[in-house]
Image (cartoon, rainbow, N blue to C red; front, side, top):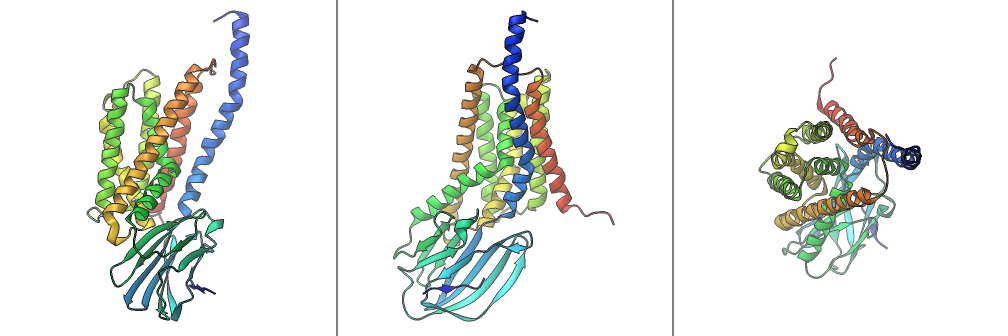
Length: 358
């Protein structure tokens, strides 16, 4: 029994080229369909935010428990923390609604049994695409932090806290965040399509990494405070800018990104770092492990970014070896699709914070 927290060629060549083009057309249509669905996918991803279960022992046997449950639209997600039955709820929880979540505060009293060795479960998590940060702090200074996921919705409280668990959890969160962050991936993809040469590419990626690491750290440590909505709009606008730069390059015009790739990557990387910080603040950071969580989350972001870059470069290398002749002007599909999706995001995000005229 457990307690539920209530909360110009020959004709043969022409025929051959036509046949190759006909093979490519279904692939191009499928690619366009995927890109057109990106705005919807991106919007849905932002509706499901990580939950938080914070358990603090203020006096021996007395626990203050905070449960932040994500909200999708007007509906609170059907997930509930199931606590050990040795904890008894005192009074009724207080409920507070905030943008994107509902927060419940409650006080529990232990029957005297230690919580070590007990298991906490997030009921309903297995059916959802979200995570829950679990943070436990005892009055003797022992702390535990972990990320509960749909595939692992339970946590057994150990006798000793493990920094390794915190490090692995936040590293994984960083990898997942970057690989699910379609806007940042499109920015990196556009950058790869503009920058020529390994040396210039390494400098641009390094500048991007340094820039978003700086703002991620400053924002997470509370040294910089920037409204997230304008930041998200600037991130989308940065993708529009790079999409136009791709077209300029193919038209024979040298743009700013081609001339100063590291500088453009660094400037926009600062805003992308603020976006990462916003995501990390939604996840929550254990106060006793801020440096470790921040560092490993950032390493996870860099790991995911390098995996994406490696995948893109490998795909480009494979495509160059295939005996395919794309239809004339097909190269425009990619930058126009990237720019179109990013323009949609830009307008949508600007409209979310600009006051509408009466």
